[in-house]
Length: 226
Image (tube, rainbow, N blue to C red; front, side, top):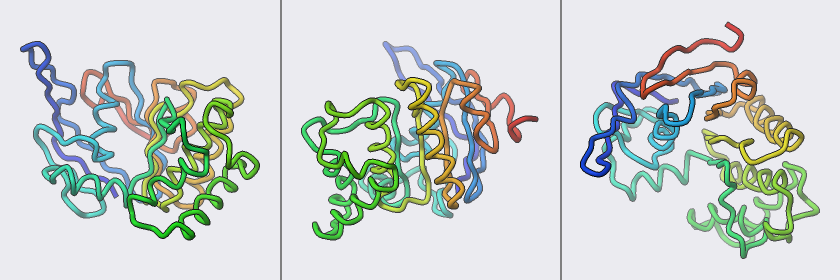
């Protein structure tokens, strides 16, 4: 599903070159649940941006479902993101003026799905995350846990091959965090490939495999519990 070879990423900050990634080799098979773990500044968010086709590497190659995507244009990357990847972010990234239902519909608008069909798909996605009774609430009328469940519904509404969750429990209390992790485990059990970015070792233990990144390099990887 995902293959990275020799991925590097360097930025210019105030005239200084900062190496965020320093030669990442990584494979993720279809249907795996992988946690990418590391402290702030380790490079894990940069790695997520590249895996999620939000950014391109400085050097190296990236294959997604057999297609090399490391040198594609921004428009092509946007198309691939919309078709293959569902995102769940720490800050939810919901549009405040839209209802939960309208937020979940959003990715389908970009795909050109007809209004009646996207409404049906969005309703089904919200029912799936237990928010059938909150469809017409705006984000400020929902708890943090409910907002994150809306974000999960938005991520899965287009039936993506990959769910990318970046610190999905970071802004939640422990109960809401457990609910969101339960949803991600359920999606994995249904056959989805799930990549979880986290600094929390306890959260990472809920994945099948853990990849530890430090100073832009993979420090270790293996099955959780090993």
